Image (spheres, one colour):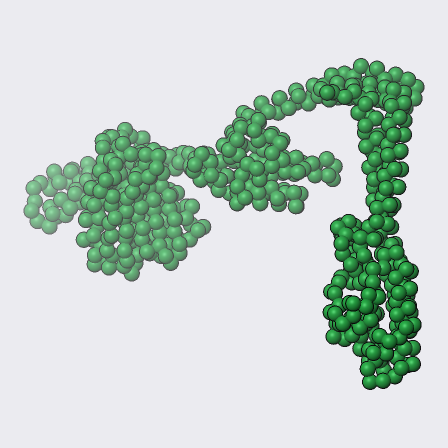
Length: 599
């Protein structure tokens, strides 16, 4: 059954009245329980002191070797014990116990000579908190004890013990509780009647305001039905103005949010917006792969609900909220779509004046940045090679042609001669032709050319290179270790160019070990349909500042080097849609890794 507003208001007022009355009754009961127990403790202490004084007089009147006998035979002492039972309504018994725990004097003579019962001290009941004290008294059936030690000639020899029944104490508290319940019941009836009478008069405009607020919450303008010149009328007028302002702001906010979302969705970089509590407000589509959840599922949730506890983004965001100056260009590795990717992360605080109201995180994929840098660097190298080609063409080839022409003229004038001059002419001609071949070969690499693509067996190619160079470098103390995968897939490429690239890499490894060492060549198939070749040496290594320069044209660290070999390696690998990386440690050696797409 659905209750009306007036009925619910009456019930609410009645329940509130009941709670107030019940709370007051419980407080009164708690205070009364403490007062009753404290009064019992005070009366018990007074009775015990009186009995102690009478016991002292009995011992003085009948001195002897057996003080217990004097106490048992003292009629005044027994009379005082019997009279004490009527002083306190909660007192159950009074006894005198010796130091062995046996009853010497008791209001009930049959219990004399028996062991004294073990009871809880009345002071423990006082030390309990209110709830536990009421629970202990509500259970009943327990006897609490107040005691006073007896002394003889300044030495303790027994005690006076008074037992107080928790059942008798509970009866007194129950009577007080019944009176409180009667008052509570009368208050509830009166509250019900008052609530029903005032509901129509007071709550009618309030209910109208509730309807207006409900409409405002749903995005509608309030009707303003709560009219009047009192405070409720003023509130209704302000509510109408607020509704108009909220509607205007809501439309503008939705428009701006839609525009902003469209803007960030077109960004290549991932963007995430957080509020001051670290919960996600919005993000671009590029960030869905980072968070692992679509926009509708992630908005309003904290990072802890979406990402594991060890995710590096937690530390970056925590730094921003702890130190509002932000974090710039931090490199972190994130697992995206099952693979690890490096991102350049910057997080900016969003403030309103001096108050931090949120943060914005920008994720830039370093792989794309490196690809662009690689293309720019490669273009620069091609431009340099073009310039070099032009220079070689004019400065080398033309003089070579002139030398060959004049050499033939000299030979024709001298005729066929077999002496030393003739042999020198033959040597000069051979050397000029060899130099021309070197220039032609260099021009083939420097100028754009068409690849002769065929299936290439890298295992056979690398084995041949190792066999060729092993004889040449054995005298220098260099040995080769091959760990080639026999099931390695073929690659599609220009075999001669690939041979030249790997020959340059292995030659560089040998030249890096002046005192001898080991060149290790291994191959392995990789995920994504690629083939990996690694060439490692244990030579001098390359410093970190020089490692980024080794593929630059003309850069070399050897006095007899020309700085072309690794540049040609880089170009050949790029022409085959591959990648080449170098890792090195000074004093430990260098590893060159080449990855090529499999056929």
